Length: 250
Image (cartoon, rainbow, N blue to C red; front, side, top):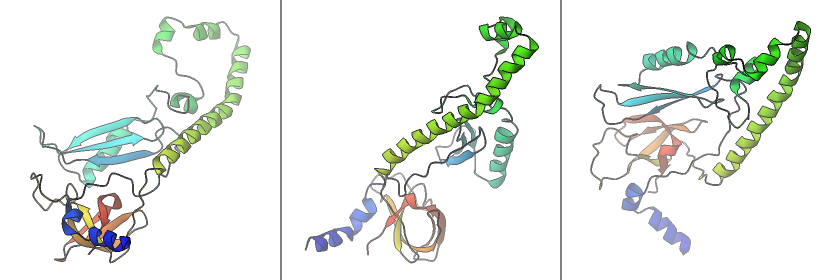
């Protein structure tokens, strides 16, 4: 009897279309280990926002997985050429050399992991620091010996940084997965999609409008959690990430 009650309530139309948005992740966390600064970037488009004075509606942001350094630009529209120009101008041409000095969970600067020594500030050359003064007083053989010892210790330092990063990501994995609500769909399943910003064909602004739109039929399902949908009138929608979808009970 309880199961019948649950099934009946699930099919109530008003509750399905006006239900709160689902903020729980539909899949477990898959940590990405970036072993080199500026080697792996994550791109994300945020928006649309209210149009700015210059007509911008979106923000294209890129984050380096290793150092967490972020680059962002405003865009009027998201096109392939705009994204390609952003990648070439703000990432490829700019980050031949890491420019961050912030220590992450690895407890080591990206500069030290790449170039084997800590960065020397120009000010240290004008007003010699202790390490510069000591190095200037060393003979060439002594300086070479110290340099060799630093190089021999580099692999150990990198390994320690990698272990710290893996421990940190393991903690994130445990905490994140406690709040995961698994959601996946098959072809021909009925689903509802978030009305905004995914379904942009309907007007918005009225707080009494439904938060979900549909139902839609899953036409194609991909392994990365992306789906293509078909409306009742034959309109094709997608690709849409599953975090913006929920099951529809007819």
